[in-house]
Image: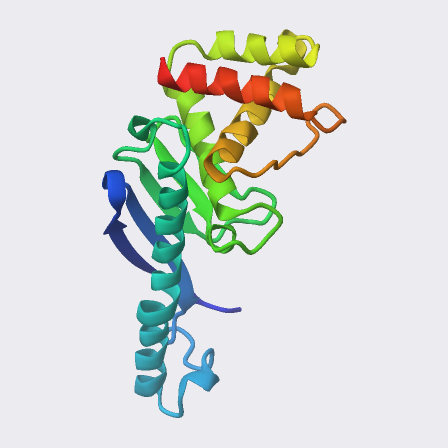
Length: 207
């Protein structure tokens, strides 16, 4: 069975966004046979493995997060929603690509998705989780969800969770300018309804 050690690096980016990368790599102290491509001697393998983390893996995640913050800055969303946010980048299980923890106020993002590997862009995923944050920390979320339900012509109470996901999706779209649509109500949202929903999202986050 493979043995791993988690390498951790933290960087503070624009708007005091603190990004921590937690990346598991082979633990050669437990099993020295795990990284033969890294060199002939164990000491050489350890050195090359750490160099790979420092020069390739961590820089690509921090660079990707800088790009997502840049896109956020170009959006109509307020900087205060982003300011001081703590983000942890790590491998997730593929079914869940991100999450906002209400208890510790941390956003968790899948490391591959942050770099654009997958079905959803890293910027959209980041914006999606910021949408969940907004609904969890700001008053008026119930008003927003009811407004979105009215625009879509669906019931509020029985669709509350799906409405939350849709609002988070549209927050991600506001960050990236994309039209990511998971068809939460079994149909694509048409252009004008999407514009109305995004207008309500902006009203909510700016209030």
